[in-house]
Image 1 (cartoon, one colour):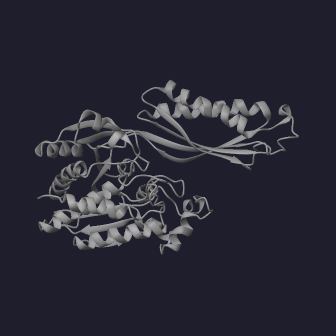
Image 2: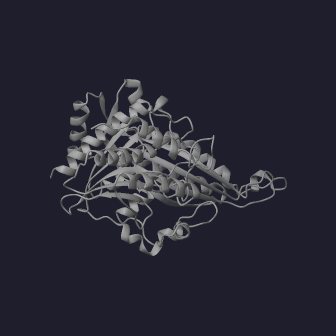
Image 3: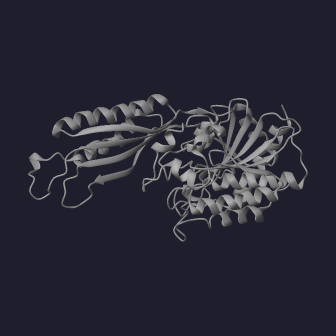
Length: 411
């Protein structure tokens, strides 16, 4: 059995066309016009591979290959949404992996013992609604109907409203839940999004651990006043306080150790005029570590610093945890299978840690999970320059193919 480099290339290039920022990277928000185009392409390819195709109550695209027994499914795939002005491989590489495996199984008339589901997952990035890993969390029952009204995009459209516009019924989101025992194993292929594999000349990475992560929104509230007539010692400037804390967050992460990282990637100043003292500042902190205690340490130091700083000029703050996922140890069984088949086709491999969050880390709560990395050129990702050579992607897909056949045929 052999995968097709031409088909892999075509899939990536065709999916890249569904973007709202042509010429400036891939921008595909969930439940958007670009989403609709990508999902129609994915469904068409799934049907061509002989799969039964449906969209679950969450909005994921699923192609199903029935097995000899009506047992738990083997699932393979990744997400097809993107960040703003991202690259053509993040998530898409895993969706293309699923499509190509389905084609090869169809061409070779392979009938698995256990059913296989090939999945395209939505809203992993949280780029539209600020709720990362949304669909996988919904699949394991961590998203309620009420949550669909809470999370909104920059235009004030909630997930529930967007789902309805797309023809989905938010009240039925619970129908997309997968319980322990429903899924035999989940396998995801992803680009590394870092420089390790390329720098070491490795063909694939086999992930042993995925770091834990949290995303917290902090809102500092002061008082908007005239910038020219309000003396400096009489201001309740929200930005002064926010900046004084933000400037310390990198040090908090370094002090925590264990490779802990913290990033402030969102900063909104309101009312947002040059001649008005900032009355409110919103900023988002992303904290990641393989050690859960380190994440908690950084969170505590941020809040302690905010409390102390807010006392200075009468400002107040609130915090909302938008996302939390603990560190995850992946399945030794699947790790060993990926090692077996990478050795079989003589690929150079690296056991490694994932510093990025993936749907795989959520699915690990209910099933065995495997995660395969392929090299990223220059370690670049979440930018238009993101690139993985098609030949490198094909190598990873061939390992995933062998692994999926093994899992789906054996108890």
